[in-house]
Length: 256
Length: 278
Image (cartoon, rainbow over the protein chains, first blue to last red):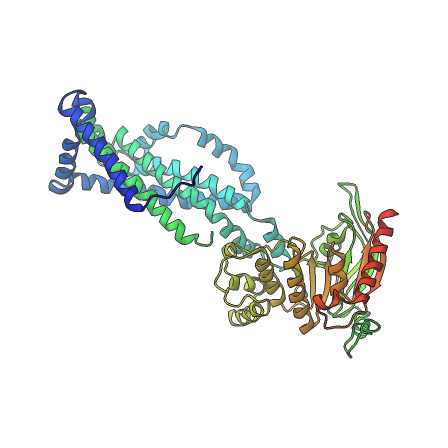
């Protein structure tokens, strides 16, 4: 077999756009001719009009987007900090892990969204309950990865550190922590996506603001174009998060 | 004949003599045994060995004969309760983190998140040297091991041999009078190994620190050392202590053409075979 010749970036991007154009073209055609009922699938032109109107004219989606992003960011930051701290406590003090890890495992095995009604009772319809749900997802993901990363330290490094007379603190800061960072980062990337999932899920169940709440309202009145519009917005946020985290990771972990 | 006696006023004999009293830089094993009772393994059986100040001593022997255990004992890495007999390192009982000791492993143990310079500085950094001092030392040694221009390179971009050069720089940047080296070139290909042996010899030649060098490579042991200690298969016992009376400074290439080197090699090899057949 002849080796495949790599395609130029132009060709690849052109091809991708073409695929999207064909996809949306067919979609528009199917909706316009009522081959499929637009109540079910909406209509690309309608979705575009909705997004334009709600983002640039009334700006109502911007405000909801802001609430969702704020809740996601807070859930992510709090969940990650707690996850890393508890994880590192597990790595450095095995007794702590022995004591609490069975309880945490049980909590983690629980479908988190089932806790949403409880969080609503505790923290109300506002942003607090959304942060709590996002936190409950992010925390465990980051915790698990931190423990895995902390355990993955190279035994040669520990031996070298011991012969050099390194203190516990030095071993942690100069060997365990840096070697755990790549694995922790995988957890953070996943944790951010799950924070968004938890927040939007909470908003769908009961909320005053947010994209999830908008989605719920639109869906219950069969505004399919609006539902697709919000879904596309959420997909863009998800992509942005992944892209941003990858860029940050490539910069922070440029030694890899 | 270059092989008859050690040359120079600071030749091996006088350096050995300094170490007899157990001053800084000497290592003295007296009737040392190490037994891992849990595993039921007698690793080392009644070993007595004096390594004098500034002496380069290699230990060879079949794998599993306790060579590394000797080194770990000296570095204070063995748990208490498995060892008997007395060991004095620089006149003191072995403790973990002894500043008189610089330890080098077979694997480079570089931190992948540190550059060449940062890795070379690591030992001094942990031992609390000021940033200026440790940087100056690291830069000097990076040049000596032939890595000038690679200061900002991460280990992933270095070859195996270059990585071990960084590990040499990290080890020699410490001012410890005793170097414990556990098969530092064991994982390298033959050609790279010869180059690094020359680098090590030239580094050692400058300061003449005490070296206890573990290897399974007889030619390496003969090329580098003042004495070669031959150990038997487990339980490890010393079965020969061969003085290597080759002139210094040595060059690995030149010695390979020297008949005296080949004679010593054959002698050590014969001792090793004796030990294996026992």
